[in-house]
Length: 344
Image (cartoon, rainbow, N blue to C red):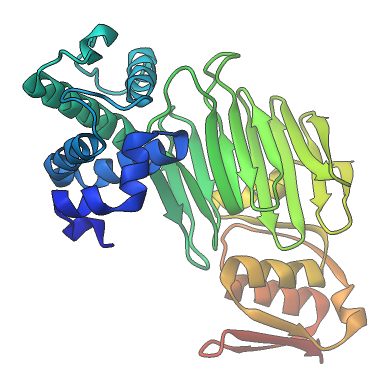
């Protein structure tokens, strides 16, 4: 059924809607209250349909199915605990009002208050996503004033409102630099990656790179705890500033080393630093960040390393440095997004 076109009668005949009215559960609450948050114009039809289901089920007018009380209380507690965002008008609904003697008009009014409060609350929790294309960068200010810089071919998703009582969670694909605002020990900041690694912090600066076979976390300052799965068990690593930890998903192992932080975060300032970096590593970066398919004709050439510092980013600048330093021949076909690197 297309719920956006449904009438009250259509809703009342829908099996999933009937199940939610008769026996509300967490899954039903999430779906229907979330749907109402996105379709507030359908509140009247949904409320009329709810009444129809109650009446057709043989209950007395004013009867409220078990579970809706709990939904209201959860929403009310959550909204009262919010510390950020615009204040909401407090609505106190005594549970005793849900008695069988409640008139139909009062029941409808309270039900609409429930739906309206749920709509506002869930709209505040709606996810926000940002995505960068190849070769792009984007600076994002999070709801808690933390700052994120996305590298090319990357994305983040998070809730558009973080209440003061819950952890701050960001979901990352690709690479990003995080400058996290400190909010107290009860408000953790957690970055989840596509390979199920999680970086938990309180206030710090760090870089996370999650691509292909695993994740790399480089801590610039502060303190973070990295969690990941190894042979079905959760493993924890507490990192110190200047450490780089790489989680290799398929091998189920990690590597840990001391590094110079500026080598891993120069990109956010439009700089490129290679420090004994292999040509194969540079080719991987050109593929992941800029979207080119790179072919290195000779395996020995791919293992060649170079050291260089560039004050600006860009594929042509990088390739010119590779050519001059390693004496390699570069053939780039922009229309095909391919780069061929070979010996002269």
